[in-house]
Length: 183
Image 1 (cartoon, one colour):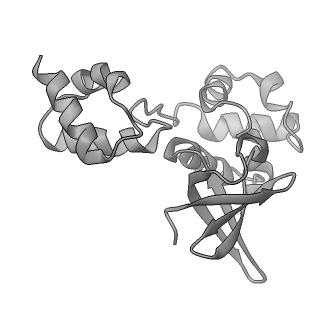
Image 2: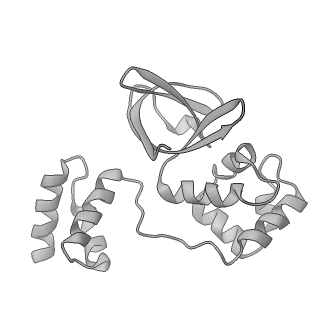
């Protein structure tokens, strides 16, 4: 099982991107392929869907999005091809729609009718936990882990993260963060 694939986007279609990783082009289905720019590097968190005659990769911008996808495909009647377009909306909006039982929001997605929206709400309401510790910027994810392992509190770390340059290597980020935390 893959956790993530990091590579350069070589092309895309209506519901997938092709990521080149070490000379291999992976076709990865995503909720919105048009947010990815060609010839730029991305890290996609992966779900491998394996059936008798099918091996499909689904990609997500962060682990929170993938976790929601996994919960959605465990709902009776919802498969990967139905769950993926739902993630085109924001994860927070989907959480909110489920918790508030907003059928109108859920039924706006393709192949999600009133009955399926009710099933999603029935199965997931109260079971979704927002994880505010996940960031879309992978460099800061690693920095957060390092600082936590050094004993710093999440609240303190979150305060200084916007001041750290995510384009630097992790070692430099840690030094910058430690200077900011010492103030």
